[in-house]
Length: 270
Ligand code: PLP
Image (cartoon, rainbow, N blue to C red; front, side):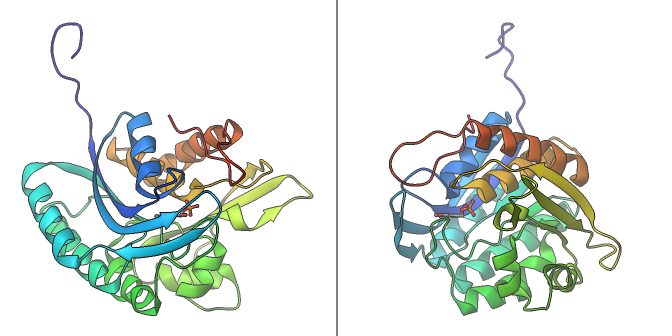
């Protein structure tokens, strides 16, 4: 409560993602990031994983029926200001998530929907099969405002000679595409580059940001980045401005990352 006993207003952001029990990535990273941005995160688990800080041992998708039930209950109760999608677990899950987005967008067509098309864990190991990949293309991406693939994810989703032409093919489905540079670092210049291709203008020149490279292996940076974009857009920031503020958030979190074990370091999100 505030000093005059009036409740604070917080935008509600829905995270639909997988659980990483090691706490570095997935839903826990999403909740921390959105909370740090002063959003209220409501969350739906798509897949329960078995992971430590070094390895993915198992991913066991939750049933589509349970996810559908959770989403139907949440949508009648909350005014949702943005949605972040991470690992969806299975094609069946992607279909019920797509049906939910269609329902909620029928009420609010401008609702920001940000997809981090997670197909593998930070340490490697599959978080999605070929059917899920196809469902992302057919059912989910056409409903998104922005998707945030790294280069390995891009080459799986749209096999093409270059990352940019793959991104253009995905942008032609309607969503803007932010190619995240974390997997394509320029160590000579201590930089990485993020590139944005607008869904409204796929063949135009991408907008580019050069980011200072922080050396090391980090967990959950993609989750943090996409959640921060969703959080800033939930406050009403335009997409490009939300991306810029989210880049600053991730840079700070990575620069101040902490170690818990021998595995990847965890960004300081909160
Ligand atoms: N979602 C889950 C459940 C994960 O376990 C991971 C990585 O391990 C991710 C998403 C992706 O993490 P990153 O942000 O590193 O791409």
